[in-house]
Each structure stands twice: as C-alpha cells, then as structure tokens.
Amino acid sequence: MQINEPWWRHAVCYQIYVRSFADSDGDGVGDMAGIAQRLPYLADLGVDAVWITPFYTSPQLDHGYDVADYRDVDPLFGTLEDFDSMLARAHELGIKVIVDVVPNHTSFEHAWFKSALAAGPGSPERERYVFRDGRGRDGSQPPNNWKSVFGGAAWTRVEDGQWYLHMFDSSQPDLNWWNPEVGDEFESILRFWLDRGVDGFRIDVAHGLIKKQDLADLARYEGLVMWDQPEVHDVYRRWHKILAEYDGDRMAVAEAWTDSPEATARYIRADELQQAFNFHWLTAPWSAAEFRKVLSSTLEAVGLVDGTPTWVLSNHDVVRHPTRYGGGATGLARARAAALTMMALPGSVYVYQGEELGLEQVDVAPEFRQDPEYRRGGKVGRDGCRVPIPWSGDAPPFGFGPGTAQPWLPQPAEWSELAVERQLKDPESMLAFYRELLTQRRTLTAGIGDEVRLLASAPGTLAFSRGDGLVCMVNCGSRAAKVPTEAGELLMSSGEPLVEARGARRLAPDTAAWFRPA
Ligand code: NOJ
Ligand code: MG
Image 1 (tube, rainbow, N blue to C red):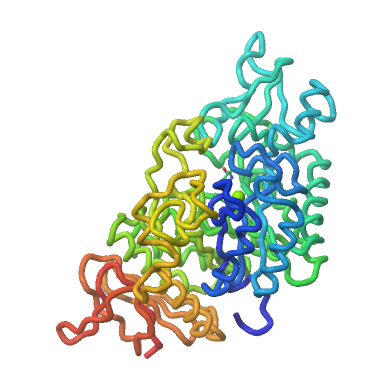
Image 2: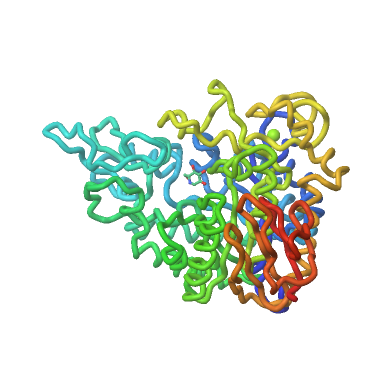
C-alpha cells in the first residue's frame, strides 16, 4: 500500500465461499461463526480483505445467489448477530469485509415475487420483474428465444399463462431495472449493510441488470448481446454517490463478464465503481503471448479511465487454475508462477479460498452434484471448485467442522496432504509460498510506483518492470529461457532458482521470478 491511497487499491482480497470455508456447528455447511474462528488464519496469510459470498435468507437453489431476504442471515449460516461479531473480529484483525449483493434477480421465495404471482398480469407487483405474455396463438411459446446461462429457456410460465424471465435458474426471477422502484430498494439494501459497517460490495452479474428493452429475439446466440447495456452504468453512478456518503473508502467490485478489457473498464470510470474483476486473465490459457496481450490491453483500458486493475485466477464459478493449467505437478508449478506474476502487477488481487493450498478441481460424483448448472443443463457444473477446505487431520472432514460430520460435498481422501495444519509445517508447501509471496508483495512493491513496462524477452516468456523497484519474468515455454538484461538480483522465484547455461542466467520452464532492477 502507498501512503494516502484508498485501502482497496492494492489490496489482496480473499474470497470466502461461505458454505465451504469453515463450519462451526457440525451441520456440514460453513457459517459465520466458522469464518470468525478462522480469521486469524487469514490475518497470518496476510490478506487485506475478504469477500464473502451470499449468506442471506435463501432456499439455496443456487447456493445463496437466490436471495429471499436481502436484510437477514440465513439460519444455515447463523444470525445477524453472528455476522456482526464476525465483522467486528475482522476489523480487529485489520481485515476489511466485502459482501455480495445480488441485484439482477431475487429468489422465487422473495416476498416481491410471491406478491407478483398473487397480484396477476398487469399489476404493479409484476412490474418489478419481467413478466410477458407468451407467443403463439395460445401464448404457449416463450416471449423470446433467450436462453438461461444454466441451460434451457430463460422463461418459465406461471399458472395464469404469463411467463417470467430468468437468466439463471427458474428459481431466480430477473428484476426489472427499468422500474425505479427496484433501484430504490437496492439503495436501501446497500445502506442497510453500509450502516452495519461493511467495507464494500461485490456485485453479482453487474453487467446484467438492464436488459435490452425490446426483449427482441437474438439472431446469433451470444450471451452478451442483451446484457452490458449502456443504461446499466446509471445504476453504478448512483451507487458511487451512496458509497461516497460513507467514511472509510467504501467500495464496490463488479462481476462483469464482458467481451473486452475496454468494456470492463467502463464499469470503473471515475463516477462509477472502484473495481471490476478482470476475467480476461482468468480465461487466458497458459501462454506468455496471451498473458502479454491481456496485460497490455488491461493496462491500456484501465489507464484510459484512470482506474485500478484487478487480477484473479480462480473463483467459485470456474475450474481451479492448477487444473486449468494442466493439473498435477505441472499445473501446480504453473499456478505458483501465475500467482507470482499476478502479484507483481499494480492493482488489487483476488485469491479464491483453497488456491493458497494448491487445491485442484475435484471430480465430484454425479450423485453429490448440487449445482443448478448440472441440474438444468447437464454440464458437469461448478461443484468441483467448491469442495470444503481441509484444515487438519488425516481423514475427511479434515477439521472442516467439529466432530466427524461430513461436509455438504465430499472431500477427496488425498487432501490429507493438503490440509492447512500439515502445510504450515512444510516450508516447501503452497501455503508457505503464498505466505511468503504476500509478505514480499507488501514490502517489495510499497512505494515503487505503478508503471508497467513490457520488456523484450525470450520466446515463450513474458517480462515486465513495475515502477522502479521490480522486474518480473514468467516462462511459459518448454525450456529454460534467458533472463532479460534489465533484471538484477533475484528476489523470489516460484520454483527452481536460476540456472547458468551458455554464459547466461536462465529461468526454468513453468516458473516465474522477481528481480531487483539491474
Ligand atoms: C454469478 C455467481 O458468481 C454465480 O455463482 C451465480 O450462479 C450467478 N452469478 C447467478 O447469480
Ligand atoms: Mg454450519
């Protein structure tokens, strides 16, 4: 962190997937008190903030992204008092807390949706959602050809014959953001949590709220055509003003899946949000050329709006990155290298729980899968990145909860090797590497400036300097590659130290390193 900058600008933020982090009461599901108990672990890891996925009242059909009451904690996770104690404990430890807000849709158990169903066609209650008559002579065809992100039609018919739009599961009716009442309600929800003392919000499907108003059929099926509408930015201009009324640099980060870094950067214009997830790095394969492209286009786009970049490798919706990068020893070596590279960059970094342990995607057996993406679309679904954290011991539940109660998704037996307790004793472990990395990042990038300069480097590698204090190189190629002349003393490496060959210092494949500038 540099002097006088808002806390989030260079923050390392740790994503807690609440169901799977820590269970205090032995019901096999993570909860608020579980988070509170494990906060010292996160303080020791060196994170600046946590983002906690939705813990509000919900039938849990999309594990909390289907909210029935935005102003309460689901009994599964505890009470509002448990939330308050967790928040207070985090603040005592110097950790900021970001909560999730889900404005694109509610649960079908939300009071608004129930009254919309009861009130019938043409009522103001229905105007809070997107209800339409169907097509065809008897209205038995959906109003348009949009598909749900989770598979199948994006419309479900109700008893009186009308259809409602749901871009996700049928239990998640989309709100109608063209109706001012919806915006007012969310202003009040934001204030509810800001008044309780949260430091920021992660905005679910931030690009989705405003749908193309004519609801016209899509000619080509392209997920973003009906989303990322210009008017969505008016919502965030309003939210900017709300956040600014509070002290302590409150912030919001957009989950906006857009098709270019420029489109993502529009969410962080000076009068909008503070951050947007940069998914372009996460979707890039293990390739120096691709990383280079994402790096320069991100920095350029963010520069144009005078904003702060973010970096992220994994979250609860995607295949864990060691697996994406090839799995096994190779995947893990690349995961370390990617983390070291990312942490050299200016801006804020999001770490997904378990990546500091080197967890891989789990092949969850079909009978245990719970993701609506699996239920609706027959895709494998996202359960494999949501398996509860192994904390200690030699057998499941690995200290996830008290006693022997098994967690909501089964943990692989091999995870005994990866339990926190075990990794803390091993200086070569992924956890030891992350702890060292976060410490080094804090000290080595402090005050060095944010300017990134791409350096000429060997084929298959990416090298850049950051400010006047750091040179970073990552080798995505298949053989040891020459370190650029701009690199001085080696500060930290993700794997093997450098080798000397043919009169030059070389960096091994699947490895990244930090250097002092020469
Ligand atoms: C994005 C969330 O990250 C994901 O888990 C959820 O299923 C969808 N939004 C719908 O809320
Ligand atoms: Mg529990």
